Length: 252
Ligand SMILES: [Zn+2]
Image (cartoon, rainbow, N blue to C red; front, side, top):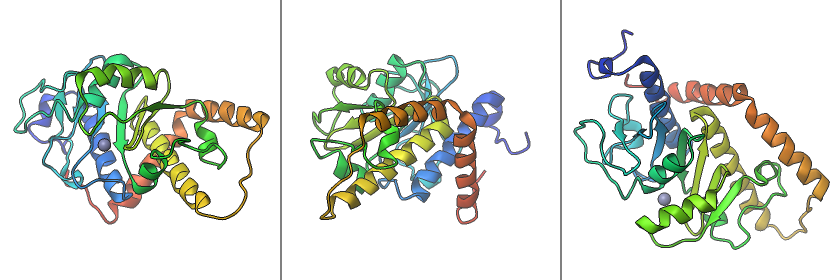
């Protein structure tokens, strides 16, 4: 693998692939306009472990490369030497979900304007638009307890997520959790689109069309079935990475 740096040569081919995918995901979050300066995190579990890859604090999303991602445990502490400090408080959400949900391999947290607006409303996400209808039964809601995540909140957050894939952090943002990077990206995009459409729809003086129970059940079933098909998420992720790379070349 000619493109590997000397540091990367110490890691497996599988891990290197995950590192490249995660670095692309960070760049994509910036490219899509979902980044919050250099705050927030996206994490990927190292296969067969409770350790995960995450961004070192201090770098902008576009400065993240496959070899500067750090490895931390579910306690948020460094598991391998790195020239960057760990950030246990910042990683608390990731550590809690990776420790509790072994079916989850990737977690992305954002608070775009549309998402932050929707999660500040008591009703939360609407399921009456095309994107929101794909999120039926997939969202857990967690009440805001403050800017910093304290130890006791981890358990409540995991309980509120349950077996779902989206955790609404009320008055804050969302955490989207899926089995791999492309599927997490796809679900994150769907959540963001649902929020954007909801914001526009709620600003209009017109009566909403509320979906009936049969259609909702059909949407829930179809979304679950589509989610099991890995190929379309992979195509969507890789396609968007190719578009991004025309204006934001990779440094690796
Ligand atoms: Zn946040």
